[in-house]
Image (cartoon, rainbow, N blue to C red; front, side):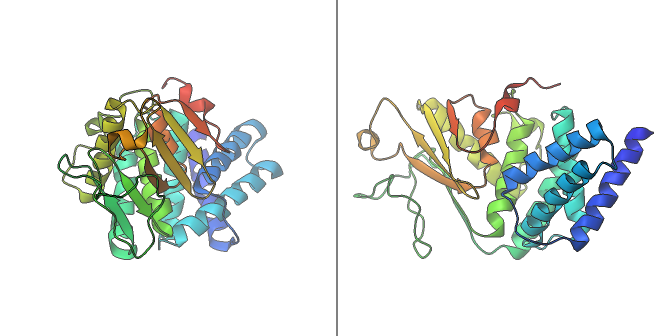
Length: 279
């Protein structure tokens, strides 16, 4: 009974806070960690403690900015926050419904409101154009993505898309933590959904990176993260410039990459909890 009351109180406070708060947002990853801290404070100090309320208000400000930019309603935002809390506390022991709902909401708003998202998928017959360099950085806005070598992935997020799609990838990767990232079908059986198909394409690209001995992953930045996958044994030019790919998205992509046990260096994002086994 206490658990039900706590859930109801959380939903009500989030909805009220989201209705009145504004201001600059933290990064999405920081919001998630703030949400976790706030809920832990609730458990330790009680619902009415001022410190817990301040942290929850801080969380709501960030979530409001991130998701309102994509057109989500206050009720939908509060439900997503609540779902994240459920995922975190349960360590994803039973997250199928949450991921399905989350993907449904994101795909609906993604296809109807977000205009810019470029995803170059892996195809065995593709290769980089002659004279191009994989280390040239992020493409200009007006330049279409080049052909991508087998397994490489180039994801360009802009504005709200950066948070929404990156968040969805993070949720799926988080659900698979300490299991196999290559068995997402257990959690997402409906591979006909185009939104989920994109996530599976990213999974396949990461599988290719694993098979080709990528040994270093470096996370840099704050609101946006540039991930460089580097083969420590060969130079980029030795394999046609295909060993350095850049992925721009929110920091939650680290959940996906961390779950395939690559050496990780992260600036400003704690990851110690990801080493814990699922409960």
